[in-house]
Structure formats: structure tokens, C-alpha cells
Image (cartoon, rainbow, N blue to C red; front, side, top):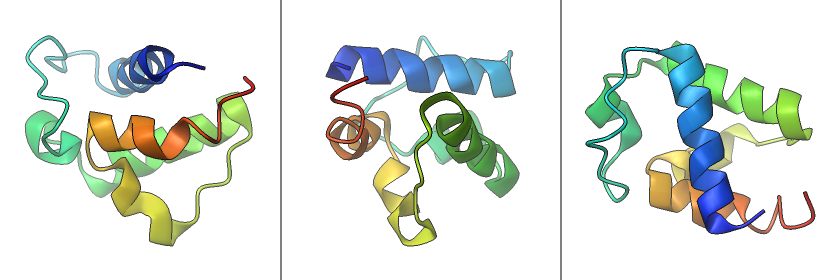
Length: 83
């Protein structure tokens, strides 16, 4: 997967969780939780969906690496490079 594919994947998952999320105005460098008013359960839903779709095991200590759209790409790109 490319960086753009990963961005699209994260945005698709967020849209599945919150179909009213304003994805068009997202700043990829700002925390997703603050921009989209995601609570901890929403965030865990994102992690669980990544596990379900791509068999990714993301340790809890790595959750801060998924804070922004840009950091999601940086963290997930090596894990999804062959997908």
C-alpha cells in the first residue's frame, strides 16, 4: 500500500465509524481525535478495524503513532507495504 492508499483506508474507516465526520477539512498534521471529536471507543474501533481488515496487531503503546493522518501513514506504511 502506498501512503495515499493508507490515508484513504483510515478515512474510509473513520467514515464507517462516524458518517457525519467532516473529512474534507481534515488537517493531516493535526490530531484526528481533536478534529473529529473521536472518543476513546471510536479510536479503538479504528484499531480494531485495521486488525480485522489487514490482520494488524497494534500494541497499545503504539497508539500515539496513530494520532494524526500523517503519523498513521508513517507508522502503517512498513506494516502494509506488501498488502
